[in-house]
Length: 379
Ligand SMILES: *Cc1c(COP(=O)(O)O)cnc(C)c1O
Image 1 (cartoon, rainbow, N blue to C red):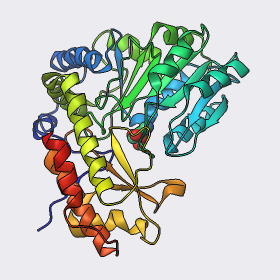
Image 2 (cartoon, protein in one colour):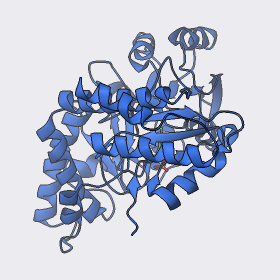
Image 3 (cartoon, rainbow, N blue to C red):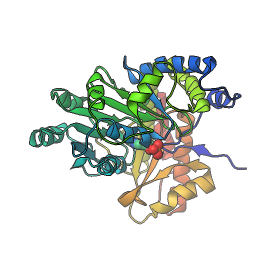
């Protein structure tokens, strides 16, 4: 008997009612029934993003919205500060460089959060920097960055915007687009939104739209101004990802029904339970000081072949988790607790981790992680 529990930090499990919504017969993307779906989704996206502005809906994975947030905002030769604290931070640099934008990296040790003062210093050194690119949650290391504090520093500068990759932050922990003056916030469908991969989202402030008007970088598919115009008519510029957007309506309804505050509290508890479980096994977190509630990155002790864990735990114990990327390959594993995940999923994931660690020769007290997690969950 094979049954797999998906605890990877994207894709994440999709709830049954969302799957059902996506299985409905096709409708035309320019016809009224679909426009009504977009109208509803538009409102609920504003709730999720905590914004008054429209949220653009793109037919791509999250990286498409990241690319759009470079191509639509900047001009050839512009300078941008990039917080590089993991794989996704590096992606901002790669996109900037692909578009002829001069990326000024702030290199942060993987597993650590950036210090807002580092951003201030970099801005002081290069006052003509047009944008600061960062992650709210760096999924490759399980780190949460102090977005609110950094946004405050950027907001004081008239000619600089902050662009936040919130792909594993929105729907995970509190991130207030308007109140914190976040100029661009992007996300994707396959993380906390509980959908399959294939949708990306971008929300722009007035300050950011001002840059869009001046941008001279090449763009065609990810043309934010064109999408904005279409969204005003409850449409997308090209054929909409109809089934995914119908599914989005169902997933956003779930989020709204639970309420953001409850959602954040529930995810926080699952994250704390996971961290407590891991520590009870004598394992260390990659980011003890600034862990993201999206996923927990666990250091694999020397002498244990960490590279074997993801396939072994999936094939033998039916739990899918992620390994490490780049130089962290074989050194960490990552367990997700965002989206459609409950307490029993976390307990199962920890039990499976115990099984696999035992197989690889790590000595542990049976059930220690499950008990420690339960202590958090019942409190
Ligand atoms: C998943 C993820 C992305 C987007 O990756 P895609 O494969 O394009 O969906 C970007 N940033 C972060 C922080 C992510 O977790």
